[in-house]
Length: 225
Image (cartoon, rainbow, N blue to C red; front, top):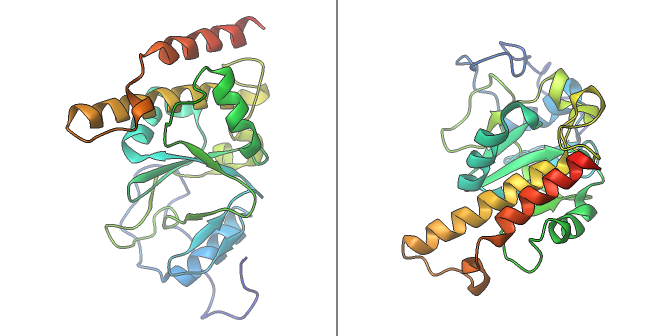
């Protein structure tokens, strides 16, 4: 959690509003100030670094998947997600808190049960590497925001959650079921590509693509329910 101990002066603000556009080259800020920025600007619990970490299960949970699948999911869903981070070979889609326990049942309902997808949700007491706050500089290999948080899609009310409609809930809140369906399909495709490149997959990674069609049928059921 953020420390209340006096720091080396006020936390500098971003040079541009979070998510307002391409980040400008900003000042290189020590990671021990990142946690204070996230707590002050977004109200997110965080731990000082290095590496700084965001605490999941309070303001948000985080859907974690391989980076390649994460980029495909973001490309397919675009603005229908909340903030999205990239840390090394892993991507993190922020979703409404309290949804971590829903993932196993949701995958079963989408007919992905029993298939290893390398997909999970970080919930209560979880930790994810914190990207540099928007417009702040850090090392090239540090975690980054692929879709940075900002007031209109960083608040809990705008994060993906379970809804009856796959188009989202009131106020345009994205649907967690649609996000998970898209992410699961992307993870499955990524594993098949790994197999084609000569990487030996798990035995269940080469099952027929029936779950892809099943996920599409589930989305249609959501729309008509």
